[in-house]
Image 1 (spheres, rainbow, N blue to C red):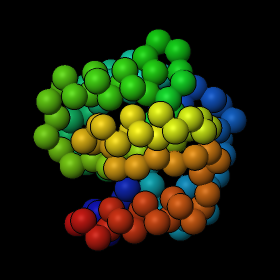
Image 2 (image 1 turned 45 degrees about the vertical axis):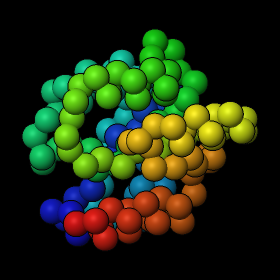
Image 3 (image 1 turned 60 degrees about the vertical axis):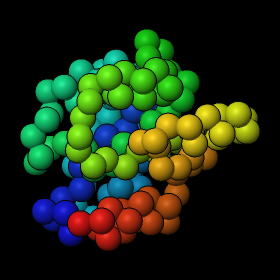
Amino acid sequence: MMANKINLLVIDDDDINIFIIKKIVEKTGYNVNMVAKANGLMAIDYLKTTMDEENFPHLVLIDINMPVLNGWEFLDAYAELNINKRVDMYMLSSSVYENDIEKAKTYLKVRGFISKPLSIERLIELFKQLELQN
């Protein structure tokens, strides 16, 4: 496994959703360092200070609708950082709009669109994909 630890960054302004994801992470059995940020700007600031390999996220789950910087604006700001590290990003949203799903496909860094709520099965699947890449 990835240095025996998976770094997960969750960008979501909903405290209840963060709590649920934290509980799901605990049930996966994986060694996960989960960091949650309430909006895209906080996530960008966090990433700027976390460039070392040990703590940089392997997986980022991004909500679309957030204050300050929404999910799309986060992705645009992330692209401007010119980070050359491998990171799997997924949009995690309650949006059922087809245009959001299609828009997610236009971002090279975004590997997929996950509808809320996140299931333990889906999270384990994402963790297994990370293991296969390393």
